[in-house]
Length: 467
Image 1: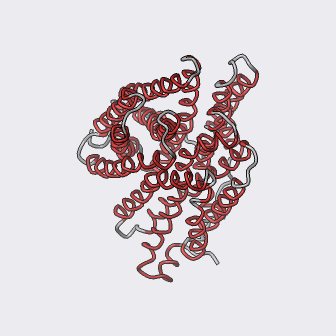
Image 2: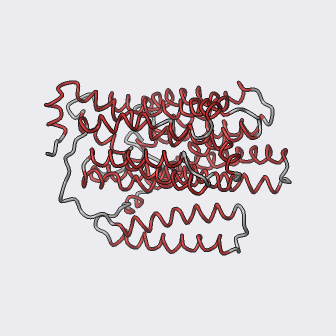
Image 3: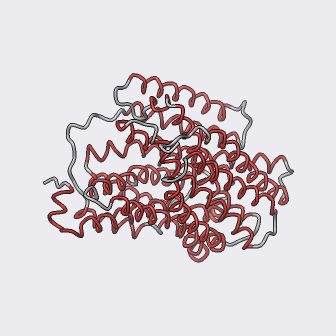
């Protein structure tokens, strides 16, 4: 028997919305923990599997790329199979891949499990906002979304610290079993609390478009990853690049012919949405790129343990959550462009600060510059949502929100990949010795600062209802 939200509310009473909110927060926090806690474990994984950064970065980029693709499946899966079945299947597959990762004997096996985890996270996580939006339709929606956002932001705040401590004491495998208790809780409680209603008339998924898009994303990442080790003239570099062009052209052609495209390309006819997408792409680069780069720098150059590197990121995450709340309040009073420009320049200042301090800087100084950057990102998040969606019609809002999230995640995947490419290139160009490592990280932070400074040009074109 299928149960919708109304039937569940009648069964469980007035407390049902709060119980569902707690369940959804727990599930999303587990997915975010899996996404961010891996970064403090990378040096240990590189040592155990005897691999370098070009291969190790796939543990982060593979997850993010698969999560990006999974975002496009979330709405279709919920409509076709219902929230309960979609969530439970995604969590079961996530748990299975996590357990298999614990017995991996080769780096490619670990990477494959991370890609599966990312796909599950991409499908499961977006369902939470949709269900919160529906179950709190009678009132309290803003507060519920605020609490949910706070909970989700706590995960990347606590993840590196907890993950780093566990890696120091139990090895890199700890980051794979860290989210499992939360996943099991949601899996079991979801049998009673999640709605099982589904729409049998849901159109079939455009599998060809989805396949072409996945091929394009992973071919691009593959070409950049191989270019870190081989010349561009080598077949293992230019063949993925050629496959990227073919897959991208096929995806665009199929999307233009479709009545209900997987990714609505028509949204980018709005100049303001194009500008917002540029900012979203840069936000992804900064958010995920710095989360990857900073722990690696602290452990590789500064000699920090995984636990101490995670501890440095803890106050930065708290400040990012607070800045996001302040940014949400300010977005109702100031223009989106002003907030975006402020956030972009603050993060650029932070990245320049991390590049300027150099090797041997104290814990508090490094923590300060990291916190400054997270404040900038916190200001950008709510202003980007306001600026990107206010220019769209009511019919385009759902598609626009999904498209901006897709672009931000895409920026995260390619940001980590490109930063690794740049880091390896500069390391080799500076001589390949230990001092060259520190110089390469310094130049990578300067690159992040330059990217955010240039994106100010795009932020001028983002308009909200107040502009």
